[in-house]
Image (cartoon, rainbow, N blue to C red):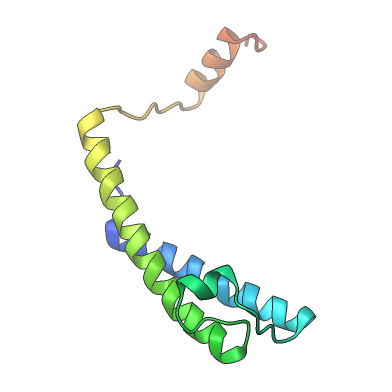
Length: 107
C-alpha cells in the first residue's frame, strides 16, 4: 500500500500546527503569558507563549509538519516498494481460524 504523499504531509502539518496552537492557548489560559524562553522558541523563531507567538508558532509548526510528513511518506513509499512485504488481509472466517491456532475457541 502506497501513501499519498501530499495528503499525508498536509495531515501532519494540520495536526502539528493546530496541536501547537491549542497547547499554547491552553498554557496561556491557565498560566498566563509566559515570557521565558521555551525549547520550541529556540527552534521556531518568534514563537512564545503569547497570542502573537502562538500564531507564529502555528506557521512554523505547519511548515515543519508539511516537510516532515512529506519526507516520511516518501521514504515509506520508497522502502515499502523495495521490501516487498504484502499486507495480510484477514477477513471473516479466516480471522477466526487464525484465532483457533492460538488457543481460541473452535467453531
